[in-house]
Structures are given as C-alpha cells and as structure tokens.
Image 1: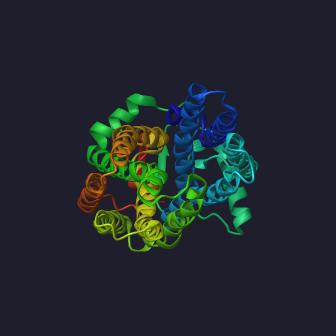
Image 2: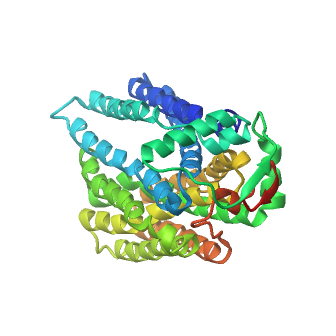
Image 3: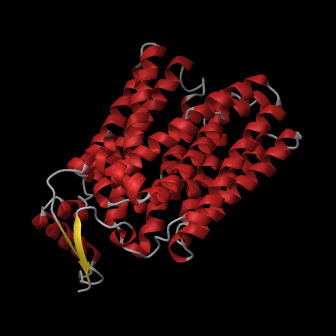
Length: 397
C-alpha cells in the first residue's frame, strides 16, 4: 500500500506519513493496557517501518548522483543501527530495577524511541521531493525549482549531459498493472534476483536478531536488564559495515560487492555456529562473533533494497520496493523468528546450530545468484538501468 501511495502522491508526503505512524504506534506501545493492544501497536509500528524502507530508499536513489548512489543508500539504511545502539543504552538504564520499577521501565524505553523519532521528523522536513517523480507527473516548474535549490546548496551548477528522454507526463502513478508488467514481462530476471536477496536477508536478520536476547539468556545466563550491553557492539558492527564498505559498491561494483558481502555473511555464520555448538563461546565472544558476521550482513541487506530500487522504472520503483519488502518479510522474516524461538526453547545447541546453518545457506545461495544474474548499476543513471515506462524516445543531446 505504501509503495502505491509513494508512486501516486510522491516520496516526501509518504516518508513524513510513515514516520508519523511509527511515532504514534511506538508511543502507544508504551501505554498499552494489555498484550492484545500491545500486539496491535507493534503491528502498526512494523507497518510504519516497512513504509519507511519504501519511501526513503526510493527518495535516496532519485536524489543522489549516480557515482555516490550506492554508498549513500547503504549508509542511510545502515543508520537504523545508530538508533538501535542508542536504544540499547537507554534500555540498559531504564530496565535496571534500581532506576525504575520493572513495570515502568519498559514503557519508558518506548518513550525514548518516540523522542528520537520526533527529532528525525523535524530534520526530514528539509528533504525535497524527488525531481524525477515531479517531472513524470508533469510538474516541471517544481522539478526545476528543486534542482536549482539542490545545486545552490551544493555550490554546484547543474549541467546537461548524457541522454535526453522524451516522455508523456502522467498525473498519477501507474499502479499494480504496471508493476506486474515490469516484474513478469520487462524484467523477470531482476525480479527473481531481488526476491532471492530479500528473502535471504530477511530470514538471516529476523531469525537471528529477534532471538538474540533469548539466546543470551537461555544459553549464557545473561539477565534481561543487561541484554542492552550486548546489543550495543552488535548495533555498532551493523552500522560500520555499510559505512566502511559502501563506497566499494560504487567503485568495485554492485555484483562483486553484493556477492562478497552475502557470501562472507554466510561463511562467517557457519564458523560462528560451529564454535557455538561446540560450546567454545561465552556471552562476550558470541557477541563479538555475531558483530563480525553482521558487519558484512548489514551491508548485504542494505544493498538488497538498493538493487530492487535500481532494477525497476521510476513509475513503479516505490511500489516494487514495498512489494519485495513484504514478500521477503512474509517468506523469510515471519517464519524465521517462529522457528528459532522453538529451537531456542528446546535448549539444544545442535538444533539451534542447524537453524543457523539454514540461514547461512540462504545467504550463500543469494551470493551465487547475484554474482551470476545481478544488474551492473554502478555509476549509471537510473533511467539507463531501467528506462521510464512513460518514455517515448531517448536520444543523445
């Protein structure tokens, strides 16, 4: 739904709306009177997060020059983990029974997330609408104004170059029919690659991250109020991966770097799993091992959103991201936590290790698929990678 709204009404209105939904639902989670209401508010929070991925990824790609698009997209997506790090620190303090009563501390932790989100909402007002989207909608004067403002802020002068594209301006998004055309007739191979990448990273992340606290408590005896201390290095590693590796997605290229990060994540998880099953890790070394694994996995997961957005035309870009996010989460993200929750509850290291091996295998399969069939999108304009569906002619200047 959010993807359709972004293609229909623009990127900026949506990423203000989705963040607003996230803020309201997060605040309501801390005020929930019982588990039923809490589950509903967390569902709405998840809907807001899903919409965020859709709006932000499409806006970043359409506002960023081709030579910086990869690193920018990865770093912005990876910045999620800066919030996770701050949340881990806040939770460590607020869940300490010496600071707040147990029944109040967890509610206050949701308040911290709400405050951080409000600060981001204020900053986000300065982000412009996508000039590409404005042009396709026939709003040329607004597109020109946005481009002049961007050029003025950057201290640069916009210059013509590359291909000139003639197109038929549209007054609305092209909708589900156009997306189905893009997925099954124009770019079926790209659709298969995108789905493989999204399912693999969703299973990998949701299965491991969402059961992280359970593993620390069940196998290493970490108290609930101290889990945040172990989440902190994990979150830092997740941010440093996109930050330090992002530039290579533009210089070395999408396909080799995606294959490398997906494969490294899978192989390193297999090594960490072998050590875990053998009982050679404690809470600290287990956290360090996962921090190294997710240094690469975070860059890999962020690059999946980058690839999906680049692979499809502007008219259906946001809708494509939202559909692949939903499918990846439904196939890999929902089954993973349920499966791993049962494996953790069993208390058998070998059983849990088998589950980790499945996640590693999915990442290795994704690495092979993207190496063979991935799109070379680095340093290319978005319209060169996926032509406008409303375009009628392209010619040199």
